[in-house]
Every structure is written in structure tokens, then in C-alpha cells.
Image 1: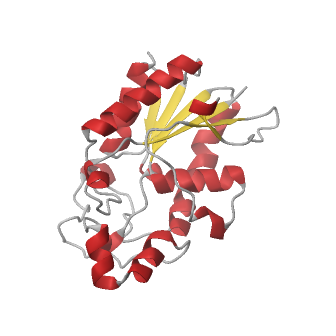
Image 2: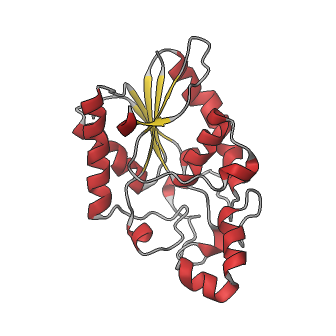
Image 3: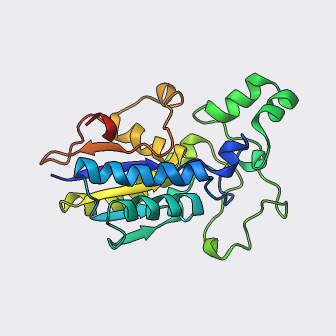
Length: 228
């Protein structure tokens, strides 16, 4: 039976500091490392061992994947990294403290930027401190200057259809290590969640979410592995 495992990266330094992160590369905290290792130990305990893996090209997702796979003895499985699994690009909000931004722009405006389906934050200034145009991992890639959840979905789902779903359809147990919004895009699609409702869905760090697929490649209800 094809099985999909979704894991949001463990706590990052900017999660801890309550800052908008987006595409900026931030490492895991000690707590984040522990969350990633615990996810892998849970996979081993439940006997759900990945055979293929996908992740973004961002450090926090890559480290989470490797720590989890090492903990369950699966560090050797094939893995694919792709920018289309990156976190939503937070544009001009990148690096800002969320509470301070709310004080400056108002709680309601920040809520719209964070949680609306199709309203992106202000665009990032080119040549600013978080400009990624010279980052070699994005050479030749159309780096966005901001993204809404809708725009994030528009890059995640085609990659799901073209690259991940065929692997899953062949009977593999696929693990995806990614981010709150790129995983929200997949959950929205797989669970048929509306545009309005998906903005309220929280995906906790380091907690594996599981979908089992039937013979027609229809996903069952999502559930947390800890509840399996």
C-alpha cells in the first residue's frame, strides 16, 4: 500500500525568535534537532519505514530529513531535493519579528499577510539583506519576491503531480520533509480543504502526518503517526 509521510522541519532559530523566515536559510535549534530525531524514532517504533524521500533545498528541512532517517536507520534511501518544496516566500516581511511587525502595521494587516489565501506580503527589495539572487542553489530559478499561499500551491502541486505522485504510485513509502506552507498546500489538495479553511490549519513541527492510499491512489484520511 503506498504511504505518504509529511514532516514539517523541527523548530528553527527564527521560529524561536518569532521572525518571518520564508526562503531565508535558518538552522534548527537544539529543540528542533530533538524533534527531528523523535520523528525518526517514532517511524521506527510504528514500523513505518520510508523507502524514498523528498525535501526542499532549505537547511532546516534537509537536516530534519537526515536526522529523522538516521534515527530510523534509513539514511541510505534515495532522496530528492527541490526548491518547489520550499517554504512560502514572505517577501519584505522576511527577517522581521512578527510582534513588532504587528505593532507597526496593525494586527489585522499582519493577519491578512500571514493567513489570507491569496494576499501576498509586500515584495522583497532587490539587493536587500535577504536577497537570494546570488545564492547558487537558485541559479536559473525564478525566485519570487513574495508569495501568498495560493502562489505557493501553484508551484508545489505541479511538482507533486510530476515527480512525487509517480514514485508513490509505484508502491513506495514516501517521506516529504518540508515547511508549514508547502505542506499546507499538499494537505489542502489531499484532504480537499477549502480556500477559507486551509488558512486556519496548523502543521506542528516534527510531527509526522500520514496518508495511506488505496489501489486507485485515493488518499485516506490524514492522521498523525503518534495516533496510529
